[in-house]
Length: 395
Image 1 (cartoon, rainbow, N blue to C red):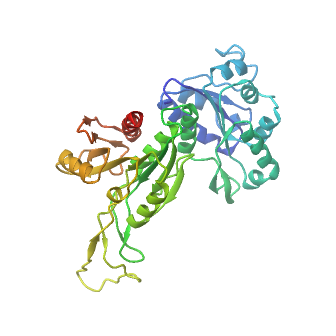
Image 2: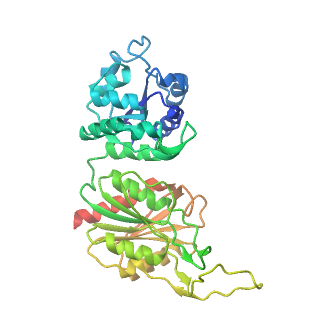
Image 3: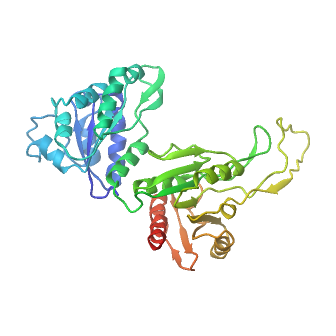
């Protein structure tokens, strides 16, 4: 999605400017050509040499820069950009953009570009909450700028409040989404589940599993980037994907109720969550004390969400198996009435729970088997969604 795209990365004079190095690195690793534009104030926080070393590209810091391949910087950069991302964006630069002021290389570039512009504010909480800043952000939104809200946490002043630069993953997700506004899932609704359910034993203990939720989050992010309106039902504490509705649950019963509610008008339900098969028969109201060498828990089966939820939507399940992977996945596909099932062998190194990659086999209800090599979970998500799109087209 970022391969071959030109991202003009604007950096302004915020203490969060150092984080732009990480952002530039991730974008470059994803295959994007990153053209960095820095305000004079930004160079007081991080050096142009750092950004040049990361991107392998010259860094533009002024209007009158002689040693540059760009003819007239602000025009050439503006025309080259597939997207302009300003991260971090100070209150000062936001005010300039809202007023159409173009008195430095960055604001000139933004004024001259027809590419979409993403603004990620970072500043003191009082500055961010100030009505003037909020009015300026509202004006930018009205003009089609994408604003990534800052996070809450410890600020440079030592206070705790809203104003921290958004997580880099959220910024990159927004960039990907902007680049893929026209896509094969545009206008479609999708529900994705993620994480392992937690079935309480007492107020402090639960029965759970090792699922991190990474696969479900990858599916939600990629579906959103391909144009779908996505609802993510999750037990995971991973940072929420940008522009995705997130419903947080804990138990299998809570997940079932949430999925039932949000799946009424969906086009596809993808159950990537690892739902516990059993739950304690009784939940202790108080913490169970250690009184003997043994403790016996009575367990009962949890709800079968995929089998019980009915509808005209596409149903995709996941099967994490340690033996007889294909046979067990086929059985689950049939008994739950699925259109697709994604089977992964959790005994394979760097695959499955907690890993950033997955080795999966996709099986459809017609018996077609697609065995995929080990790949990132985002790549797996793209391949699964390719199959979903194929079914939607036939319908």
